[in-house]
Length: 263
Image (cartoon, rainbow, N blue to C red; front, top):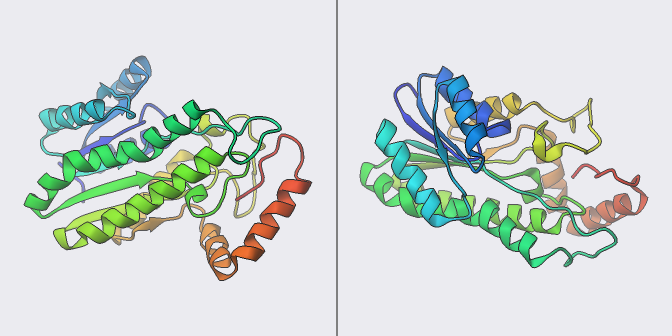
């Protein structure tokens, strides 16, 4: 399905981004990967057979340069995966509006605006071609709540909102949009968390997320839920926000120190 296509993926030096790149390459696609860590992204590219670019996704200029570089290497981008993300915990003993302005602003730039910047660079050309595929790797926190991380929860909700808006506004242009909302995945971002090893909320491998994305793309499904149980949680939240808030507040009150409860 993706043989010969030009794919561009941000935040792909490791974790979910790398797993997705490997999956596309296995399908015969030509893949450009980017990351802010030059040494690591070049090492990854050499290992998997991709082309590497250094990209700070908080910069529109850098995003545009990456897309131009991917086009120069492999032709116009057919699939863009906005995977780079960042998360900051709330300050210890703080409150919902705590956290530094820097952490909030950086979360907004990376988790939300990076996708906006990529959309600006890609959508006009995709409209002319009548096709294109945009993947936003958000989080289950964008549908529910990640306690003790206000900036992460808020910006991931915004990421989901932008994905929905793009899907609605450009469905008639032939542009496909997918929003990936995993719960916990074994990546650098979740190091230090108490790992859930069994059950529907267990930590997944990055390759599991890539597999879920490809299954959804094959069906042109918008919402990608590597943890299927998130659909149940989301529906329960929609049925009664008050009950959801009450239940989560109770879990915050009773949670073990240092353990972040499931969403």
